[in-house]
Image (cartoon, rainbow, N blue to C red; front, side, top):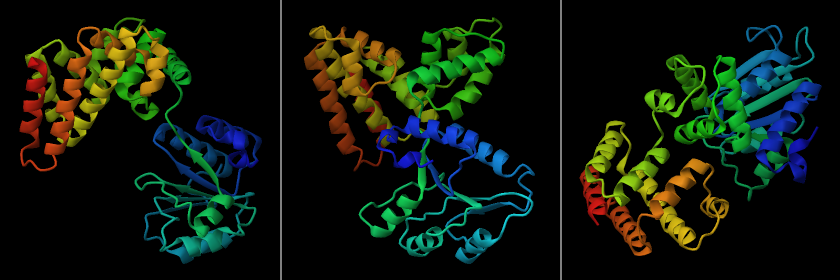
Length: 346
């Protein structure tokens, strides 16, 4: 099943879906490349591969694992050439080994060109980036041989259903709006959500999860906090804005990361003001600004109605000016405090 080669399979979710179908049918490719931000799905897929190919467990003769960029190519080749014992196939996992590196790619390409049918080898990119250089012939050769699965953040509807199901498994229920809110403030990664759902379910004394339950135990990601900070600034809530900024410093958020996030929200605020003044629909605004969650779009549009387009542009200009200054200042946190103070009193 060469699902990753089909042009219709360019959508990452479809590729993942096709991969799960391949697992169920037993038609598992010989060479797989796993990468992407959604570690929950990646680990789940690895677990499914192990269960199917290594029913005897990870201590069996037919499971091999290599890790790091300093692995022995000879050892890897020997593992590939060793016949499985009392099983049809051998599963080889290679973690965080850059097969596209100029130091390895030529040799690796030669090894992978003629893999025996009894092999399933998976290269997993976790702590190193997946960065194939498609200009190189050797890269093209490797990608032609491999089935590449990118594990991405799931689309909103699937994620909401997944959250609801996990709360049901814990004996709880949650509305679609609150499930979406939870996804928004956690960044939408299943890996994070899995732990947060457990925390919220354990905390709530009621069967129905509420937003107050979520806010009580979940620490929001920077992106979500930036929306609240933007609202404080526009409403001239100087003390609350600085208090929120101090909380971000306590969480050891880097000033350069903070200015990027705040500047992005100010750019979106300009767009929100234009859309609001022209009565253009929320869905068009979300599409333009690449905003996934309704709660984030509503926050920006509500905030935009409280200010003017001139002010929005001034906010953005000040953020851009600060972003440049952060590259040369020795006191980036102080510069961020100055920025938030100035924006909140403008």
